[in-house]
Image (cartoon, rainbow, N blue to C red):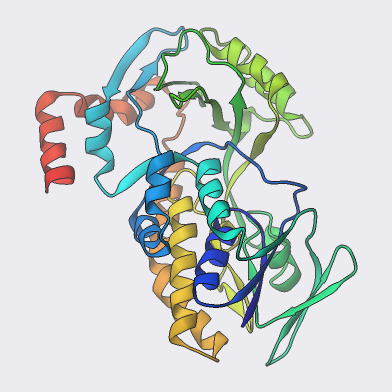
Length: 381
């Protein structure tokens, strides 16, 4: 059996790894000219943790994971509001989870699968044709590839989805926020190694994440009402955050030296179905729960693992396997998307009273009695 996978991100690499372990031949096509690195930090757990165990990559993920020594919340002036220490953070995330950069998660998957699959960069598809026995894709270089299965794991702005399911605007639900993430070439002096510092003010959030191994991540998230159409990322961030002091000017200056930046709207993909015939969407191309739900990487790995399992359980009947897989996974995706839409209303609130209320549970978690309860409930329990 052969599968063509569009996208060399987390979902695509995880699908290639699972299918190669099942004896499939796989081809990955990636639009970008080379692998990307960095990305924001994610809490990886749930079905992703379970899938990583079955895929045999959990030890490698743990080797690249990092523990935040302190998560500090600041005022725009830099004055500290409150902070969560390492034990409190662990108590709120639970035992079967880890914190890792998206780029490091991709690296682990890439290293595991690169000797078992063909990966072509700077290539994607322009046409899809299928019948009851095979699916054919025309590529940007004019060649045609055939396979038993086509997996569209090409992200929020999926070309696979647009070609086969319809235009992007029919599926994207805009959550009225924008995000920019990039790696810093140096850590701001005010940020201690291995810590995360964040602030929120008037519908804007900014954070600097120090991994502790010398790498540092800048994160900006803000309500779309601050944005202006046509502005490039540097102009927009400078205008939206230019009135803030503390580490913000130094962090913005780091954008000019960054190798790459992720800059996009925060949008969900709401699709009534994820497959048709021998073509299936996977990861953000299918559901994109957004960073508000904080579960996208876990769903990508867990969803890829479950997809392979379903294909193995339905040998020779790919449509049935895809239907079974979607029925199993969709309830969890739906729940996470609902969570993301609820979080939208309280993320980076413009009202200072609402901001205080949204941070109240975290403030309470710093109290010893509350932390002891969380430890008993989520770590020991």
